[in-house]
Image (tube, one colour):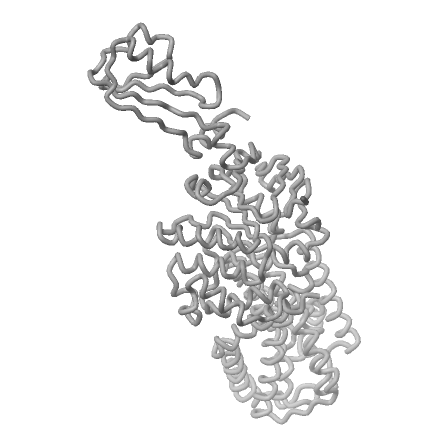
Length: 253
Length: 308
C-alpha cells in the first residue's frame, strides 16, 4: 500500500480546509445557529414538544444531518473535481497509487472535515438547548457512516460533473430538498397519512430518524431499518465508484 | 541489453473514433535521449500518456524495465516522471509544498535535502515559499520539472518542454536534460522544434498520423536522408542554363548569377569534381562556391509529407 500517497492527498485536502477556515468551518456553524434562532426560538416557542422531546432539541439531529450531508458532498465533490478542472489530475493518474488509495485520501479527508463540522454543530447546539445522547455509540456510528457514504456520493458527483454548474446541481436540486422534506424539522407522523407514505421513499428520512433515535430513543422508522438503509446507500456508492475507476469514467480515456 | 521502455503494437482509438495510435512499436534504451517529432495531432502526447498510465491503450503493451505497465503499474509508474505539455499546476500551493506532495504521491519517504538540491538545480530555491499562481510561465515549467523529478525517476518524459519559453530558458532546459542523462536518467521528449531534437537527442522518432514512421540515430538519420546542395556563384549573370550543362539538372537563380546542384553525398551522384570541370568547360567564371546540408527539419518535413 502506498501510504505516503494516501497521507499527502489527505493532508493536502485537510490543508485546503484550514486555509479556508471561514468557509469550511465557521460558515456551517453560523448557518446552524441561525436555524436554531429561526426554528428553535421563533417557531419552537409555538411547538412545545414533538414525540415527547422539546422542539429545540428535536431539530438538533436533523440540523447535524443537514450539515453533514451538504458538507460531505461539497467537500468530496470539489476535492476531486478541482484537479480534473485544472488538469493536475494527471499527476494522480500517473502515480503508483491504486483506486482504493485515491479514494482513501480524498473521501477520508472529506469525511473527516464533515465529521469535525458535525461535532462542532453538536457542541454549538449544546449552547442553545440541553442535549442528552442516549446511545452515543449508535450516534457516533451514524455520524461516521453518513460522513463516509455521502463523501463517497460527493466523490461520484465530482467525477461526473464536467462543469461547476453540474457540481452544484445535485446538492442544490436533489439533496437539499430531500433533507428538508426528510424530517429534519418535524416528525413525519405530523404529516397527513398520504404524505407519510410518500416521505418513506425519501432515503434521508431513514438517516435522520436513526440518528434522532440515538439521541432521544424516538424515531419515525425502526433504527434497524435506518442502519440498513445507510449501509445500502454506502454499498451502492462503493459499487458506482468501483465501476467509475474500472472503466476510467471521466478520468481516463 | 534490455530496453528500459518497450512498446509493442500499441494502438489507441478514442471514444470519438479518432485513431490516435496505430500499432506503434518502440524500444527505448537505458540512458538515451529520444526525441519524438511530429506535427500537431500526430499521436506524440497519446503515446506518452499511454506509457505513463494516463490513457488506456486499445491494444498492444508497454513494459518499463521488464514490468508490464498495466499489471505492475506500481513498479512502472514509480520509475517514470512526467512533465506535461500544459502548465497544469494548482494556484494556491507553494513551490515547496507541491514538490513535497509529488514525492509523497510516488510513495517516497520525505527527503528535504534532495528536494532542496533539486530546487537549487532548477533555480527555484529562492522561490520555494512562493505561491504557484505568482510564478512566471518559465518558472512554472521549472516547477513541473521539479515535480516530475521529485521521486528520482529512471525515465523522464518531457512533453513539449520548451513550448513557449524564451531562448535562455530553452538553453537552460537543454543543459538540464544533458545533466540528467549524465546521471543515468533516460529521457523521452516530444517537440515541435527540430532544433531541439538536433541539439540534444541521441535518437529521433518521427510520428505522423498515429504511425511511428522511423526511429533512427540522429546523426545516421541526417547521414542517410540528408541531401547536400552545392551553389556556384557566377561572375556574370546567365539568361538560362547553358546547353553544355543540360544533363546536370541544375537550378538557375532568378537573377541568373547562381547555379545550384542537389546531390546525395553517399552515392555515385556526387560528381562534384566533374561538375566544376563542366562549368569551367562551358566558359563560366566562378566567383564563389558554397555547400549546404539539409537539416533535420527538412528531413522531417519530407518524411511526414511522404505517403505512408
